[in-house]
Length: 175
Image 1 (cartoon, rainbow, N blue to C red):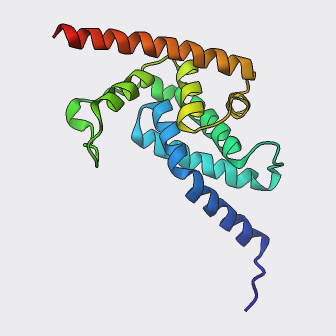
Image 2 (tube, rainbow, N blue to C red):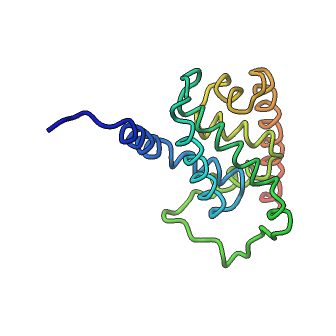
């Protein structure tokens, strides 16, 4: 039995490996960026379609994770710019939100909600650096900005998070 695969079969296996390795983290990234589970799934699917089309041209100047995250962030940006999203009410009632599979620590929920409420340019830096565990250089590459800009945005995001979480804590103490 031959172990040689056709170029298309190799490309397909490589894409499948990328999907298995990075699919979940890209889904989380897209969800936090778009704030909608169905849109996030669509964005991840579009990300892998785009990656499939360009897989042969990937030069390896960054890691595959960085490359895929950049495609995902750009796809999410495109989704947010689309005319359709401007006219759709993305708010959900409490009844529409699915219950978590495992109970989530209320502190983690509060931090998560606070991160989601950050302005986009800060939220994306936090997502890439902390959730995706990218280096400053990788996050800068994904976003197409300088390393120092990512660092500055992370510092500003930390200030904003600290202020908001302290305000939240003070409100809880008063109750």
